[in-house]
Structure formats: structure tokens, C-alpha cells
Length: 240
Image 1: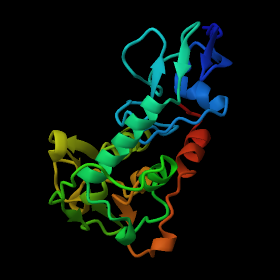
Image 2: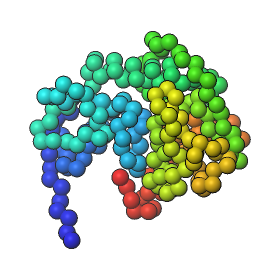
Image 3: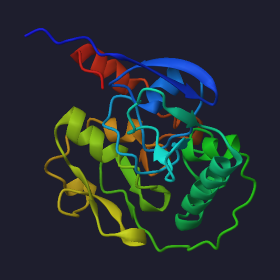
């Protein structure tokens, strides 16, 4: 069966006239036109879930902010991707992530290679306005190759999605709610005892922070291999 070509929509982003296929999201179109919108949970190659809310944008005619990664373009849409209001919300979201977790960059294995750290720098965050929770979180070093540090986890679920959608193992999941939510392996058993984990390392490569990292490497070697996922999907002929 022949699939009809997608129709073209015209819209504006920050006053710039752009064209897009009807099946594209605001984030897709913004990137195609060199307009930066911050993201954290979003990763090309994985399903978009709009969880971190960093990509919120203003759409004329709507009183609610819309997540750019899951909002499809519409004809005549007027999108504001950068405003004082959005900048304040984005800074607040990142500050809350720092306040909720135990993100001490100076002693983190991914210091200098962390998406959260990079976002804080890009958004010009030089202090946190909210009280730190200093949650009592554990470290799981039971796996022979990798480590899970709950102190660094921002619950972006990249690990959950890559394990389910790309590796097909579905070792990772989420347990609990709110500040008690945690990523878990299998039925909340130690990672090293997981019977479904294939030790492929895809979860480690897509993790934006030092929550998942390889054992036995120095800080300067702890570079996340972001190129692994798009390369793998291209080889498989599947790209979201």
C-alpha cells in the first residue's frame, strides 16, 4: 500500500516563518531551523514522553504551556520558544532537579560530561533558590560492569525506554511516586542479580547524568557514548 506524502504546515517560531511536515513536532521543526529548545528526557531515537517539561513553549491562543517534543505542528501556529517567562520556568525546573537529588558535581564521575550540568551552565544558573532535600539514596554497585547511583538520577527514563524500545529486554522500570520514585531493575532486585539484563550498556550510554556509569574508569574517561544509539538505529533501519 502506498503511503500518501505528509502535508506541509506553515507556522512561526519566535517570529520566524518555517515550514514543516504535519507529522513533525515543534521541537523537530525548531531544530531543523537552528532554534535551540532545552531538553533533558528527550533523545532522538527514543519515544518522546514530555516528562522533564524543559521544552515547554508558548503557543498563541493557548493559556497552557505546551511541551515541544510531543506537540505536533498545526497550520498557522505561532510558537514562542524563548521569552522571559519560559526562561524563568526552565531555570526553576533545573534548580528543582538539583535541589531534589544529591548532585555534587565536584565528586561526580561524569563531571564535565553531564547533560544536567551543561543545561545549568547554558541557562546561567549560578545558585539554587530552593532548599536541598538531601535525600537518603543508595548506590547499587552489584553489577560486574556498571553502577547505578540513585543520587544522580533525574528520572528522565531514558534508560527505561532504550532498554525496552531498542534492546528489547525491559530490565528497567520505575517504582514509587514523587520524591520516592526510583528506577529499578526487574522487580527491584540488585542490578547484578537481574536475569533480564543483557549487559549491553545502552542504558549507560544514554543516561544524561552520573546515575549510570561504567566501573573502573577515571572521570576524564567517563564520556557518554551518545553516538551509539543513532548509529545502532541507522544500522537497524529504524529512526524515530
